[in-house]
Image (tube, rainbow, N blue to C red):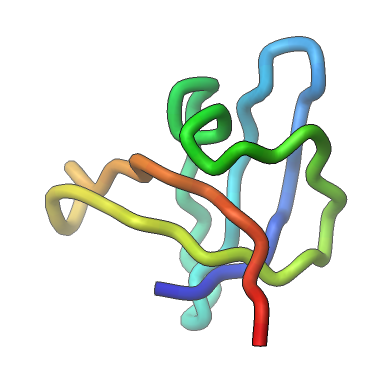
Length: 67
């Protein structure tokens, strides 16, 4: 799934993304670390992997979207 980086806190390695429908979804440090990233800037296009649905949707991986 694709999303757009919305917030990122380098101290906690957590933040949030916006899904294509505008829904914000938070991610935690383990999801960020799983993607092997060192930094994330707002507005960057990312690829995410998720578990669950609806209010229990959880991001398990955040990495840069490559074409």
